Image (tube, rainbow, N blue to C red; front, side, top):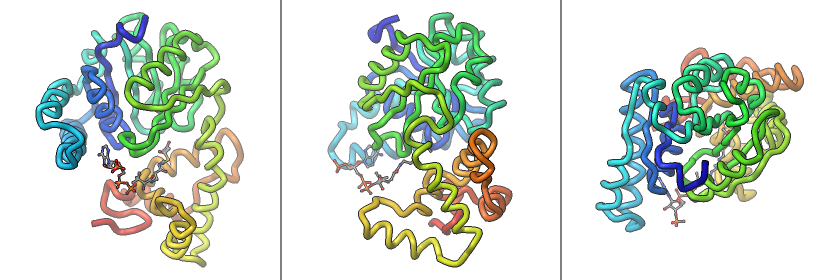
Length: 286
Ligand code: CAA
């Protein structure tokens, strides 16, 4: 398959990452079907895409006509098998739970065309292991975006053990076409490059929360003065406490027990206080 052959993309998952991926794909001219398990999740994802596009219209960066045309390229579905039947690329952005990802790809790989590229937006998990759920694993690879997808340029394109170099090159070309800067990750290891470097920081954040000696807002204020666009605790709420927790849990299972999420993160997860998206996490949000 060549870049010009790619016309339609399925994005599985309509949360923070999924709706952002859908947005950048429709803005680059692709037809996109966004899939989720509940209509309310899809409605919320569509609302977020629309708000983001309206923002760009308001800023004069996009015409209202272009926005309407792009929104017209985006549809939704509750049926992942039906949704992938006529796509050339599938990008999965479901929660960071290995069994869930494997289940999604087992369904999708049997229903998608045999040559379709199958990509996971996993931020930490083994591409080689997820690939065990798919037929033709040479077409399976990682495509890791960063949040907010519509503003963060980097995409890690990750090889699994059986991924073909040709397919990695094609996904890099697609990443450029949707306005991103792809970086090839040759070795499939927990957290790949960016998140692996951030892993000790995540463990530290969890420990600081449990210790309770210094308040998150004090640290965040200092880090912002140091030039970070967001403080580390604010960023955890922004990315999502569930994502943050599952990432640490995966590191604790694959790298070292030193990464085990602490009791504060566990309590937030149990209460459903998942950060900005639920209105409450480490902080309270409007
Ligand atoms: N769509 C497209 N562009 C948009 C937009 C939208 N919805 N909303 C705003 N923009 C544009 C703005 O118009 C502006 O463009 P100009 O510079 O041309 O005017 C630009 O984006 C910046 O907008 P903001 O004023 O909103 O930017 P900000 O200064 O408030 O920064 C931020 C916002 C980019 C989110 C910044 O706070 C930041 O970089 N935070 C850290 C984000 C980060 O580290 N993400 C990685 C998280 S880790 C991760 O994602 C890994 C994982 O696996 C979980």
